Image (cartoon, rainbow, N blue to C red; front, side, top):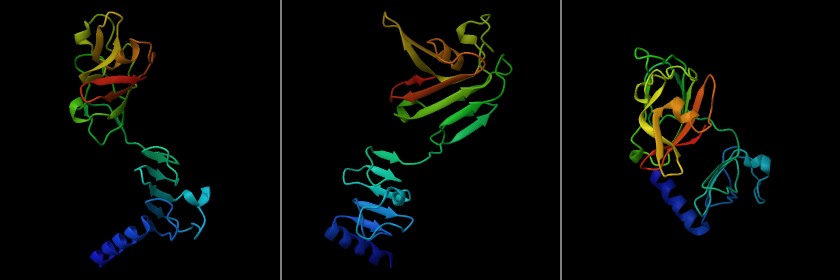
Length: 203
């Protein structure tokens, strides 16, 4: 049965250059009408497109729209993974936003978030928040290497001076505050890998 369906789809595609599921009127190379409510002949209305998924001939993927203008266009809400923890944590390809809600202010309570080698995840983005931010663990009594606020396992590049000096740090507080980022009770940074290094791209 599966083989028959597969070959039937191939024949349909070769004849029509379009595949439609739940629709006799596909608008793109691949078109799913999940709600089975599209018109038989005309272009689906905006309200009908809400439950549609398409892949265009140039490879764009649309959810809730049949005319995606980017590689991926989602016409609706988007849910991303979120983790809240008060302990050491290892970020993986299943993570996006990780929130630290514990205390990290001395040697005994020091918490580290382990991030992947940037060469293994080019383009990946993480949002990291430390609710126990501000000056906790950064009183000035410690040298930079002994700061005890939330830290990352790999230094993140956050600035470049006029003389060419590249600045990086493992400290979430320092990354988020040294160049006019978030200040106060919480520290928030967004980092991205370029395949060689991690960069702070937002606060």
